Image (cartoon, rainbow, N blue to C red; front, side, top):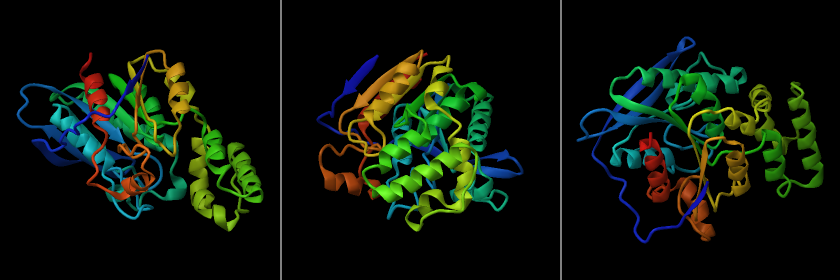
Length: 313
């Protein structure tokens, strides 16, 4: 099923009466720290959504140290869910933000660590008598993590937001082909092939160092072993796949590939939404600014689609 949502005339306010408190989860001799947001004034049990951020140094609120400022995409999404009577947990991945503990070194991180952490959160939420339904929503790389963690953690449903529909090497080659000169593109292909074979490399051109630095190569090797289409095809629970039409990092085709692979998938395309979940339309200046503008709300269509999905048994 494919549904296309257009921009409404009025943007809904994301301010909501909600109770916020810090939460944590003990894993592997360390702790992962996050934020719980629960709606006020709601009697009885409420559904809860576990929100997972994207790749790199992206924290619980959707902000990255690689950007000049915050965009608060996941924080705003959590606030929008609270307004609709839905609780949420969002957390800093191990090695990021408040969870950047000495026990976890970047060179030792693997995708399976993140999947295991998310599954542990889901299991914890399932034992919490306050919650009627447990759903996980992953953004970008978090979508792949969600698709693998949901069955392990016993989630009731799974949400993939701006998730890649192809293995990492395909996505990287597509993203880099128009940005790198041929010699550097050839070097990138060489490095990717080595990593895909499970081999690290010390020969890294300086312009590619931020992408393939030695400490991150083991993580990339682990990530290259996962195919998002295979992961979503294995899900036996309801799946919501959401993609914006103005995403500069993930294409609509990726969402369609995931949808085609998902046996119980629902696809929602949001007109004008970009990768940080803001409505930017064709305004290129706003597209760039949205990555570090917390005052710009997340797409209300995303909040509506996610809320409706979460509340549907």
